[in-house]
Length: 187
Ligand SMILES: C[S@@+](CC[C@H](N)C(=O)[O-])C[C@H]1O[C@@H](n2cnc3c(N)ncnc32)[C@H](O)[C@@H]1O
View 1 (cartoon, rainbow, N blue to C red):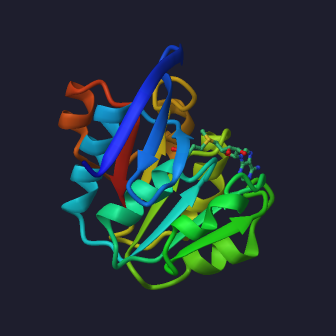
View 2 (spheres, rainbow, N blue to C red; view 1 turned 60 degrees about the horizontal axis):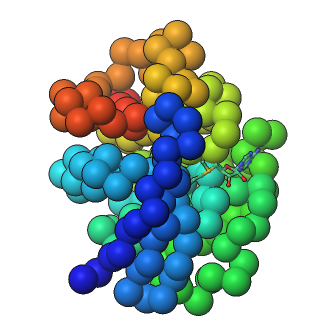
């Protein structure tokens, strides 16, 4: 078995913490509900993108799952707290850890977003609304943006004027399974 994901705790409505024991030896918690995360990754796997940017690394649990599912893609992950310092050895050379706040305009992040490669921007920092406000403007047509904690921490009125008219990706499935992730593609 590749993964051992256990100890699901529902801390509050829609907020989950799981332990992830990975075959590499990485043993961390990650903050997604198990079924939801694999549905979401399955939907994303059907989309052609070449670069992943995650805002909110935490302990790197989702980063690791994304590395498994998209092994050929570079992943840049940002957090203002370095919680992965002792676990870098479990990640491949295509995973880049950026320790900085994304709530002040991040030059390195803006540079990455300006890369012509097709991108996935995954917003999972504590302030998703600000992330969408600050960074969706740099994405190109064809790029994807996803937000976690939809309906709990980020709502339609928060995104409407930024990405409201972008193409919705996988929403019927995400809604059906009660996922708190939503995905859009810039048109
Ligand atoms: C919900 S956790 C991320 C969970 C992770 N994506 C996962 O699935 O396991 C949110 C993270 O955002 C980080 N964070 C909070 N404020 C931030 C900021 N201003 N800039 C960058 N990261 C920040 C926190 O340190 C925390 O690790």
